[in-house]
Image (cartoon, rainbow, N blue to C red; front, top):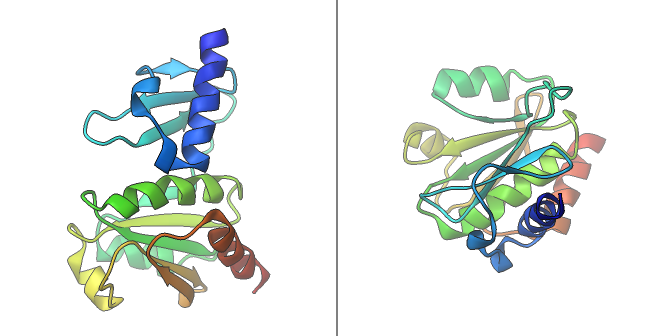
Length: 168
């Protein structure tokens, strides 16, 4: 049980400060006492966490955009505010910002959704929204862009963006 609790601490620290994360500290598939599974990706040094509790079957408010039609349906047509993260798998700052955004969005418990757009797979969307640098993050409400930032942002800036989005 002690190793499970230790994994939970490592995952929490990794989400709070990915720059200090040591991926070798995690063991594939180890579950901690709060029901999170910590998995070390073989292709990146990013932590992926997923709910494993059988009582928590609600799908996460975080999703990948598959195509332009999917974007229109899930972002533009959403009645729930959506944070859109334009990123790439090869982008170092994106690998740092992504887990931070995911943690902050997950903490909102469905009040805000997060759409992830890989610019290499969805270049038309990136061009449409004039994404020139990544990561680029947009806040959508009622199908309209209401806020955005480019590059790495600290948790306070992202939380402020989410708070403003919910207050509108």
